[in-house]
Length: 145
Length: 411
Image (cartoon, rainbow over all chains, first blue to last red; front, top):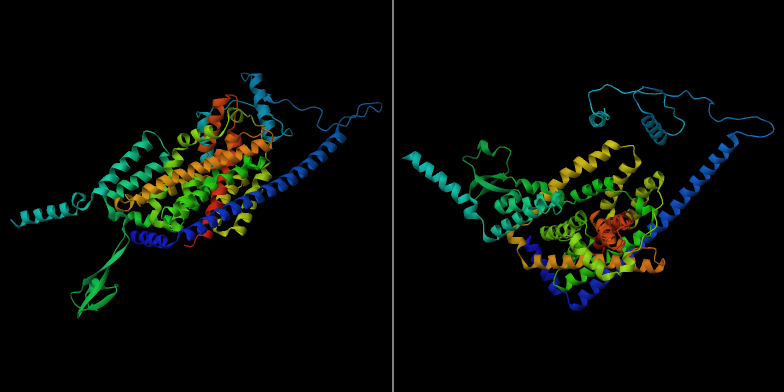
């Protein structure tokens, strides 16, 4: 290792001031140009594909909204009501000791993660000896199997 | 009497082979240095995940240098030409006598070091980093890539300083990469360009990364005005899952086509990120960012530390490397800030220049420093997510800079 180092140092010592300047200028110029060119190119590509994806998603959203508008209840002279969802949804079966606020939080969490199409049918306390964290740990460890 | 003599001979043999007889003064200095680094890692918690194994590797190799010894062989004389001990060994007649080749295996750390020497560990570390990196802030504000590029200028300027200080082109390239503030990249480039300097460069790189909160703030304050530091930036737009999935694929295609030398680092970084963003290989993503990353960190740290043998580390070159590394790092920070100031001007004061200093990789420490310095001016200012853009751009930028150095410098 030391031999390599010494050999390299001797090699550099052999380089003249001019050679060193040329080498430094070459590295600075190439480095500056290539790094900026690559990252500028990335900026352009990110902008293009972000705009494309955003455009496609906006179009999909507009289509979905238009569809929803068609499905909305039409109020007026005809008196015809087109209803998107069933008029009556059975409320979830909730154990007495669970407060309403907790039911609301659980329903909101379910709606936020799984979408509004899912209905909470029942909420009940489970009598497991494990804490919520222990449950999460067991789930995490057993999920791959 | 024979037993006593045998006992004394054995004790003498143990004493002669002990460190007391074989170690030199340089080893003892390095032992002291390694204990000091252990103190910094444990008590001050300076990058302990890396500094602790590095310091211990340094301690081990200076206590027992053979732990890094390469394999060798010795010629053992054969009792007869059909000596059974020679079975399976290479035999040779020297001066009319038969000898067989007896292999001497290398030290433990020598074998583990092959992962560093062959450039295997750094890309694997990048795989884990990719699994832990969220490129969302960068995708939502792609202009931050400019800051990630600007912070790499320090690398190329330091190359000039190194070459005029008497280092070879290859050595200068390896020293300059410290300015990228990215440990795995620095190790990867050094193993290719100047493996003899690996110990000094790795230790300098990791030390400066650990010292980011001390080195950067004075430069940040010196190069920016109070008004610039107080800029509150607009909230970043949310990035869709599809954009995050496409990003690693595009980056790896683009960089690998134009700069193949950067492909091992960028490829692994983006593979890890795709593991994370795709959401379909959770188990692999977890393994890459936890078990694999931890195992590689142990091997990398200990073996890099073990390259710092007293006789090769305690030289004037090491001092030069440490000084040049500090210059490279400070210049990277400065150029990032200066480009941040340019963006501040061009956007009519919408960009806080402090996020420019996060363009040096050091994820997420450099972004945290931007956040902290920004909050000193305006406690209600949250720059962290804005600084994460240039910060992760810096990782890509330093890998590209590494590709340029490997491409341009003959080695």
